[in-house]
Length: 209
Length: 209
Image (cartoon, rainbow over all chains, first blue to last red; front, side, top):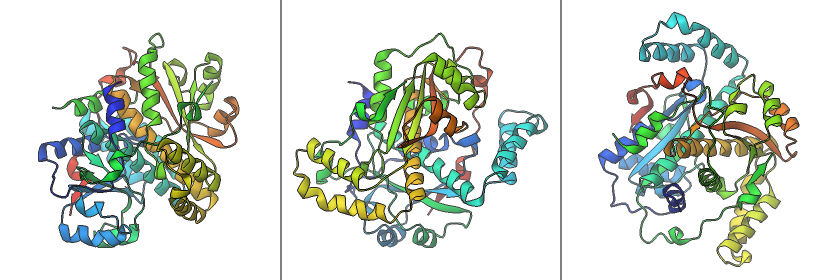
């Protein structure tokens, strides 16, 4: 029908990766740059992507992932973390980045910074952390599309123990792991690749007004 | 560098759409099908996409969007809604869909359904609704990538009044609007298209373990 639809139909939540196949460096650079370009609310990018290569760490993460071996067998393991905090200093840093990138005087965009600060100040701490977490899901949605376009397999995972991940990976207190995405190449013996994709019909999910 | 990176660099949060330019039907079908293929937790797809074409309704939505005229000027307005509820009947419906799609006996996948039900039963009502909302962000991430690939402009929007949207669009009590995404074609006079994209460096957002 169309390359995009073909790509999205090709992808599936990979159950078993071929542990011998590695994503080459050039392709992984594209994935990293695509993650850097992920949009976020106000452009604040309250995310950190931890790439776990160490095999001992990856073995330790299996029980913390309820036995899901994709965290070990995939070529690369991406842990998407969201910032726990959001406030004036993060906005100031962003305004500084805008000024530098666009060669503007930070004074001239101070008003925009103040607007962001006042919006954020109205949120409670749990609301801020929930807001940051949602940005991780935007990253996941884009990442899965990027991988499908490159015919790289991926497994989006919410089911893991964040506290154990934080401890095993010694993640800074400023961030919490929100989503996992092992990526690589499907094992030929992964039967699930042959299962028909299950989706609701367009009639179910669209409404016209 | 690469088509994916070019596409993601090309996109920006469009401030002003060219109201005379419409996405053709064939392209919009691709976007709809891509949204149908969006992945979600357990594949439950707790989302509804409302496409607002009616110009009177779109005018009424401007104040509910704090004056952002993209909701009127864009070719198509997509309102991403998340289900307020999630429970046994939704899981049963999903299991039924799996069985039909894959020509399986629903009895044989009952165990999988029970597993989902028990996981969901442990969540409070606000947790369920937050979980459903997060799936909307996966859809947004994928949608923005799809649009960029097709060189269709888009504006991801969190800033609007959900209660007014529900009322104006008479959205069923089962769903809440979570995100807006007007899509179409940028106005040549939208200055922001020429602004340099602001992102943190890779050093800032990646960590290797």
